[in-house]
Length: 607
Image (cartoon, rainbow, N blue to C red; front, side, top):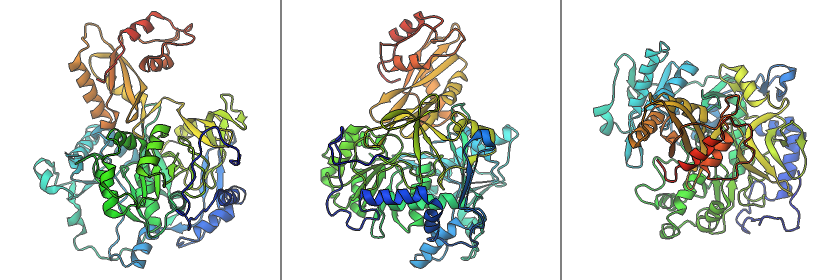
């Protein structure tokens, strides 16, 4: 790695405020480099030291880490601390709660239903994972809107039955907003049971189930480029150690801190940095239900003042939304408790970074721009608050044990300043162990393009100082408000409408969401394109995938730009969506006139 030197870099560099991190876990860049060197050159010793912080019913009997990243050498696999036995609930909850005398009964729930799922998307996941028990709440608020989660869950279970793939035996429902949802909550006495009834009379003592190190911990679904969601599998020990360590160092967490992550708990950020990472460190956390601007635009700042939040973690989408309201809402509240500002979900643009730093952090708090994925389990490229000089928009440097590389299209590794495919040479404890039930998809998605490397699907630039800058997805994926969506999945939903013959989906920049969906639809003969049809198409996508996938733009496309072999030239569609007139080489198009027609009918305003 190139170490930032005393020379003035091309981009302005920001340093932590003097005295803000006198007790930092990693006090400066030299300390970071020393720890990073140990983590990559002596990984067994490094991770053994981390493991000492946890309880082991049985210590490991094999090597600390075993793996194969090369499809030419056999099946891809990762094993960490093989032979060890432990229990993650005991480690992250029982020990901390009992040591701090916070309660008698400790219960861990693993299945989390995100409000972003439609009943059809939930059904797909239930069938793929072969779930026997579904745990949900009756409802949850999103702003002033009450989402009936039990209704979504019941519809999903019915869909499973209709498809002859029924596997849910019981649906356990937590009374969260029962007084509001009872009148519209479907109930099946043979299947449904209230959580309170289930827990009535249960003993306060529950012996932990001791698990093998590589036993499954959870399956979290993320969109795939083929349209079918992938069940990303994480296992007990590696995920536990990695989320604990990243939380401690990336947020420089100490026991007098109050931490708040605003993410949806049903996504990977909620798993790693609302649930497991904070609990493993005994963190005091704020849990939030709602949206950033309800019931008023100062809601987030009000909560920070009320609870004395010191470490704050949110998404660029939320930051850009709040920027629209200016400084005035912040000036009503005391934000002096803040020490670290984190960002997650997508690369943050420099303008939003600077507003976050200048206005929210009052030029005191470092902005920790974290890059990672559902598949990585935790942060892989990230600054450390007291150690890393910051550049707006850069994810900066690799976390401990993570070894990034940049490859060109031919799989050749690029040195120094370079731009290409972001890959990783070796695994770290928190990396996914597979796509649940589909080894072939695991290998073809992440390892076949460049044997010997884990392929992220993201483009990346490395600058003169060795800092990494994420340039966006290289595959057919969209990043909307920090959530990955598959173009194939959205296209499949659109073409289910009886009026649509063909559809293609690309991204278009969005001031708040980062990217939004721009859809081209070709109608069947004698079908009319109008506002009613657009609303029906938006509703169809919401029902099939969820609200997060609702298109912002839907354009009538009498034809799509295709090569002579029939392949859609998505590059051209993206340029049309972005209103870029310099289209480059169109010699392979079967009908170049299609492009002029699409430009003439281009959407200027959202659908």
